[in-house]
Length: 116
Image 1 (spheres, rainbow, N blue to C red):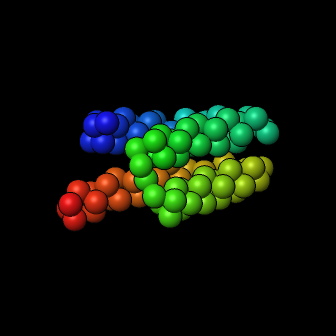
Image 2: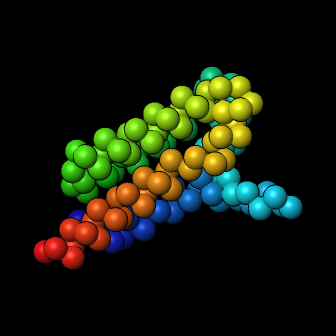
């Protein structure tokens, strides 16, 4: 499997979910995860499922359990905090769990390619 191409696809997905658009004047970036999170109950669950797909792809790429556990922790934190009305929606803009996970995954595979 071409790791570089798959990592690029996952980066694009993470950007769509976490930082695709910018709030004018404030400059804060947000994505689809924050938008669908505005739907009470279902929004955060749907965002969590999209984030879980990213973790599934990471597993198929061969990421170790340690990296997968850190990624899962980011998603759980995002879903739990995102489920808090109003405050969770604001925190969703700042946490960016998918961007963090994409960076974790890329960093892991960059380290692996350097050592091999």
